[in-house]
Length: 141
Image (tube, rainbow, N blue to C red; front, top):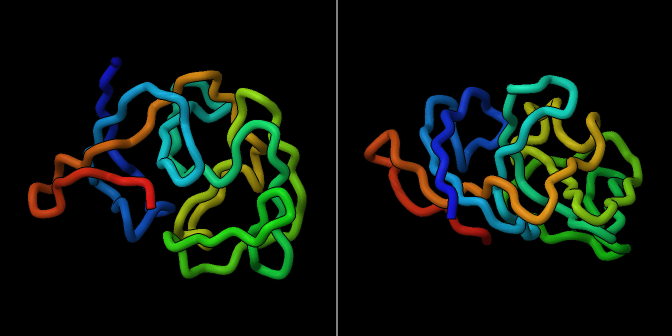
């Protein structure tokens, strides 16, 4: 099991993660609802942190502010934001579809960069260790 540390440097995952939070990841296959860290496909060495909405073999659609996976409207307890723009994305094997929790602040997610290649293992956020007052396990809802 490979552990890795990352610093959150943006606000797209608020309120769960805030700018300046320090998190620990483990390498494992990502599942829907997991928060992951991955390298931006067009910017080597630049990492993003987003939530997995759809996995390999699924179709993700955005219509009228709502997200559907394989034709079923998706419960999203992690966000209160409407999702835009409308669109449909087919997620291939070894890819995930990711969105920021704060949709209005999330620009580099699968709505703009498409589904993300992750392979069998990727960096899944499991723990926030700083700031100390907010330290604790990051669980999938």
